[in-house]
Length: 182
Image 1: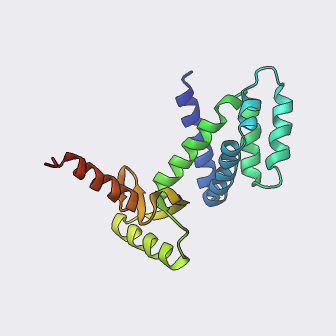
Image 2 (image 1 turned 60 degrees about the horizontal axis):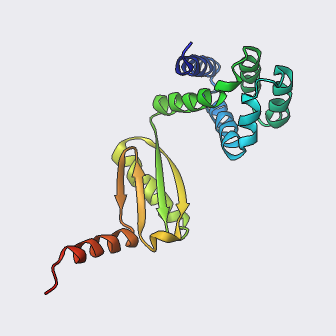
Image 3 (image 1 turned 90 degrees about the vertical axis):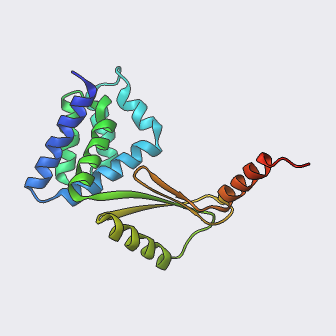
């Protein structure tokens, strides 16, 4: 079976269960924790992909990492994935679940890059403005990148606003290089 179909089926099943039990927010938070842990520690991913490691060992590893940190529904879901020997698809399932929930709730991912940290008031103004423009709930991911020198870069979906000083300097440089100096 196609790995994409497997991920979609498991993610939809988890979403439907969480929706039925009115625990979508809790399970969404759990899934984000698991997803971030997998992303941060590549050894977990490699362990789940190891065909030699028995399923009981994989289950024990996942339980030791998440049992006390996630809800009963999420723990049961992890058990089902392991029982069905779908460990190699866990990350895809997690990604798909996040997509399903965000689409259902109308949540937009927004990336905000600045040269130095911004105060909470500025973050709230940005979130409010984008939320109002897109008529959506916003999840702001803030990144500090001193390389942009100043200003900001804002990404929403496939749109990007680059008001960074480094971008402006590159534009000026290009224009100067185009100019024929006599």
